[in-house]
Length: 112
Image (cartoon, rainbow, N blue to C red; front, side, top):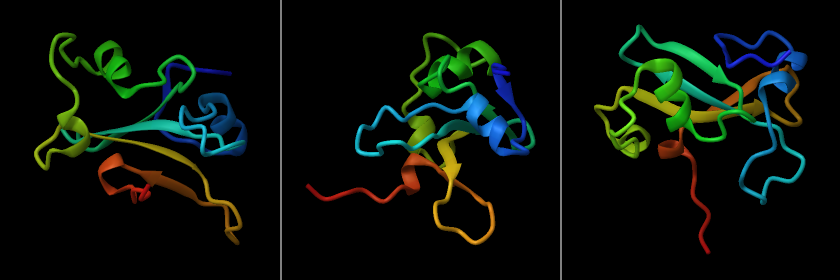
């Protein structure tokens, strides 16, 4: 069952319920979940419904009290940011089931 967010993902069914195919078409078949870690709330972690909230900003406004008129871009890059926004999904080929969480500021960039 989809929920606006979960604070943990305990199984593959919960990942599938919160996940969506990424907006980046270079990841065919992948399922990812948008994540936010709230540094202003004791590192509370949110796995958002990625279909309903394909971008972090709208989720932060509706569920975490982010001001609607405030810019959100610095939440991806600024060292003093309140949120660490990223995405997560299963690691393919891993011996144990693990999750990969990547914040955009730490995601390796492809050279064109």
